[in-house]
View (cartoon, rainbow, N blue to C red):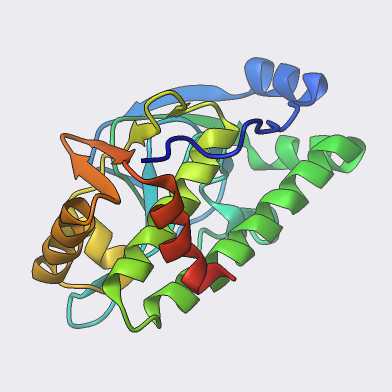
Length: 230
């Protein structure tokens, strides 16, 4: 059995000026699990940054079906559309208890205009979000649910790893999503999600239980994920 991923993982450097701006200009709110953080098609007065917790961007179709189009982790901007227009275009819901930083939109945009590091950081976030969406669409189109699941969990782990939220010794990380919520992300039914997770556990690849995911065989895990990613 192999454990852990790469030996070293470079974390992004936080611009001190941006950290000072957030601490002095932004309000911190606690949002309980299940509550709506961003309401679709509402005026955008603040830029919202997830400080702690997990959140999801959801699309609800006319017949009530839910599709998760993004999973947000600490450090992510929750209402990206507000960077270019004064209207929230997404519905964002708290997946766990969340700490959310609210920064006045006008002040945030003014700060970005005068800070090249902040501008580059936002551009990197937008580029990464587009890349994750492309990979997610590819994974959803995969013929095997195990490959889609492995890709989704691999992406999630690598994002958490960048912010130091992975237990490298045990190769495990917090995973507060229910099977239904995972299904909304992958386009799978609850029954299919349950079967895929059971197969991955019985094959000794990974285990998801009690709000945590542990990778049991790193090589098998990567092989399954990279069927989609390569």
